[in-house]
Image (cartoon, rainbow over all chains, first blue to last red; front, side, top):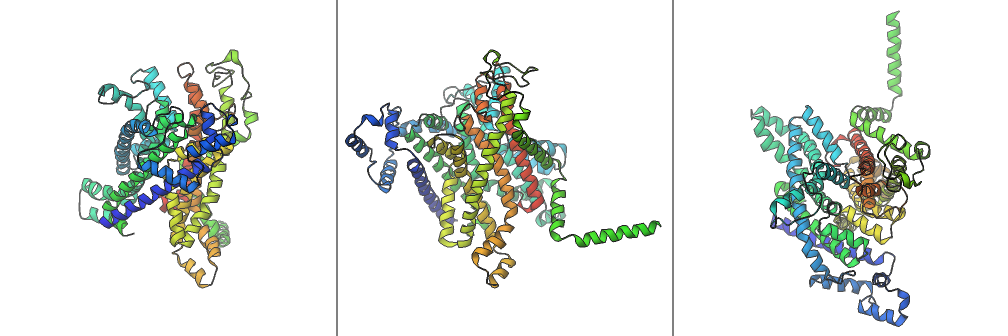
Length: 320
Length: 304
């Protein structure tokens, strides 16, 4: 197990390095001179500078070096916690992002828990009661759930529960330590929307995987031993049926973090996702670069943790 | 008399059986499984209807989707404008009908091109093994660490928006999973005896890949592409909802939802109608994909 964890962590580090290279190349190789973009941001135009001044500015930002050295500079800065300055507000990007990470984490972890617990729960109910009306209805709702655009679901909920019934506040975020009740009421709709896809896909996945396990020989053996249904479902079917569900979690973490971009925009929640969409529309590439990197690193880390859990649950994986 | 005709029928049936090749029998089985359950059929009907809507949009739309009529702005559903009008007095129904063109175009283009990159890459990874396999796998791992919507948003913005930028962004966001899937399938198909037979016969590796392995990966590739179409259309809608994508004033569903959001209290139908259209298309492709998967290869359930 230790060797497996070690290998998995090393591979994760490698993937993070590849992520930084992809991100760096995407930001640099796409059309547009970063310096011209920067000057336009500052409401100067490149034409105001003579070539010598342009060269001086280029040297100041380190853009005169070759791509490899620029990459090393950027990485060196990151290791010292320096993500550069925001182009639009001139404040430290590292500071901007660290103040917003707790918000996105709060929402994301809640959405992850809701999606996992309810999704797996519904899936188990469907599999145990397969063929009944409960199964038909829940499966249909899950099929609709994986296809609903979450930003649209958010707007429908805002219209229904926020504007018509006036049960829940329609936007904003309050830290739970300031006003727990308001914070919870503000979180209900965003967390539900962020978990919607995961909830529905977990229901589908758990159901089909449980049904597959039900057809296995060892389940028949368990029945013929005279075990009670409850024991068979809990000890055998669920335990084996959840393995593919856990294997899919990595994709779902990426999906939740991607969804935060949309949901934080709709509900006006000051998290990393909202920061990124604002920065993207203002072409503030320092924030975009840093924020995207943080999200990708979070996904890789989550994947490592999931793979370790997976290897612990299913010993066959460790010897691949 | 009666026995005679029955015998003839029997003979007919026998000859029909003889003419049937295994391929056509398999084809009939696939058709009967696919059409045997309601959801895939519903999906197919939705998709056919929406493709027809996109093709015949000028005939179906009651008004020009770009024609403004400011005195009639933000009207709710009426006999003249079934789904009301937006903030510039444009007919929502006509805009929803025309919006299907953009969604389908971007969906089909991005899925086809990402398959054209992903499938050969996946085959190459499976075929070469060793270091090439490792490089391709780690590269796709890296790409898949970015949430698809985020990397697509980034690339579409840097490229400056527009239809082509969105298509390129979605290709970058999508080809890695199709590469991984093709590679995994090809690796498992490679273990079959007929591949060994082909190798013993001295077939070249490239032709083994193209003639023996690729056709046997066809089913999962087709299923992933169908479901991928839904995902691409959803991603396109999310991008245009965030204001990145096909430029105004073209009617795009995602942006229509966003524009209607401002008038949620006055005319909720402005946001609801285009969102419902997105949901229907994605539902259609997903259900069709599920149906194809169960018809082509039920063992893939839970894998794709």
